[in-house]
Structures are given as C-alpha cells and as structure tokens.
Image (cartoon, rainbow, N blue to C red; front, side, top):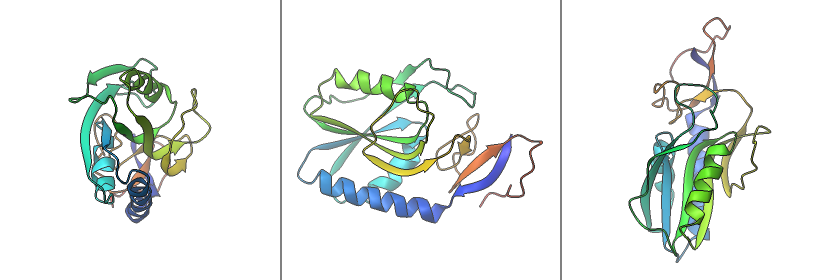
Length: 183
C-alpha cells in the first residue's frame, strides 16, 4: 500500500473545522459540554476543532477497535479505554475522524446512552457516503467522501500516516498514481 492522491487539502480541513466549531459554539452556548474523542484517529480532529470553539469545554477520550491492521471494519468492537468521568446529565459530543459502516459508532452510542447524558451528538470530519450498515445521525459533518480507504489527519494504515496534514487515498502498490508525495 502507498499514499495516493490528496483527497482533502489541509486548508479545506481548517475551513471545515472553523465552520463546525462556530456551530458548536452557538449550539452549546451556556451549556456544560464534554467532548469525547475516539482514539486514536480523532485526537487530531478534536485538538484542531477545539481551537475553533469559543465556549468552555471539557475533554475525555475513549479507545475502541474494530479494524486491527485491516482496511475494512471487522464488525467486532472492543472498548480499549473507557471514559475517565461520568456523563450523566452532561451534554456530550463525540468527535470522530471518520464514520464508515456505522457499526463501531452504533456500539459506542448504545454504550453511552445507558449512562444518561443530557444530550449525545456526533461531530465527524469525514462520513463515507452510501456504505453505512447502520444509519448514524451526525450533527456536524466536515466532508462526505466515497468508499475509498483514506489516510492522514489522524487516519492511519497499520498505525502509520496519521501525521499527514491532509487526507489522501491509500492505493495498492501496483496501482498507478502520480501523487505519492507527503505534502
């Protein structure tokens, strides 16, 4: 596998996060907001998104796995790290890097709803169109993309490429693609 063409440039990501941050600031003004990043991929999205939010927020993290080293979800979800704080009565915003099949996020939503948050919403940098096995209501979306496997901006392949400042398509080594530079 290798880095293919750039799908979303760093500047486009920054603009989308500013838009989402403005909407979150308006929607949660005067509310006790807890943002939860789903590790490892969403840590970059949440950090950069938080810089565009003008209200006080708290942060927590969860780690779940359904991929392993594969490029498609296994459908088997494991919680690797749970929250450090209670969410009952809190306004909770889950921050995701990408939503594809919806299986992992559906499991996570069910797990969090039983803890009785005041509200539970989702912000996702990327949502893959037309491949959800379970429909997920995403309140804040950066971009809708196709089914290709993407890396960069927190998204990885076998633990690598999260540090790319843009989102790129991952391609087979023998596939023809002229854009293999890291921008």
